[in-house]
Image (cartoon, rainbow, N blue to C red; front, side, top):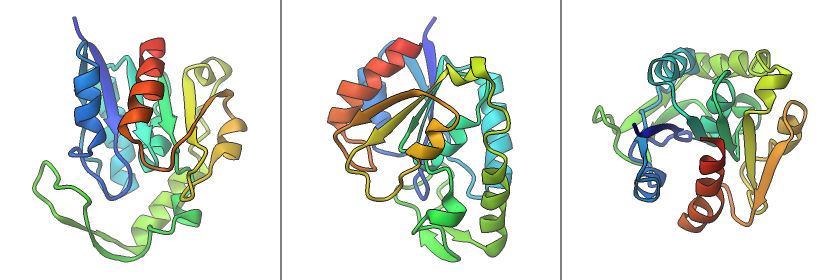
Amino acid sequence: MAMKLIYFHGYGSSAASGTIPTLRENLPNFEVIAPDIPVDPAEALPFLRELCDKEQPNVVVGTSMGGMYAQQMFGFNRICVNPAFFMSKTSKVLKVGTFEFFKPRLDGQKEFTITEEIIAHFAEIEARQFDGVTPSDAERVWGMFGINDTQVNCEEAFLQHYHNIIHFSGGHRLDDVTINEVLIPLIHLLA
């Protein structure tokens, strides 16, 4: 039976993220599940928890905003790549307006709208995102931080709750070298 990996994309991205084909190609023994994440975190968090409960993945991988969501999938092995734990406070991209998705979504949507209400929902979720951390669950979470990430730096917040950490020579977005040399070995370690 194949192992399962669920991948949570970053803000403004989709299930068509360029990371997904690389994971599928380099993890032939894994079923890689990659959903389009709802824009509003009030919808996204319960949707992702339900997906994890249903699929029972061996590992959940999230990048940036997806890393913030992955961290909250308590009870599963998680890898948070450059997690954006405080989108509502520090993000340069989370602002009111209508924006285009970086890649087409599975449902065909090409753009999304951010409202003050959605930003407030991010703030509400961020305020309690670490509430479910237990000592045993903390062992199941790894943080990957790019030493050249100029967009997000939540390493200090990560280290207040977790201790499994890897630094890689890269920026905010994953590239194929980092996926192959850092992320894939870590996935194998956790799965």
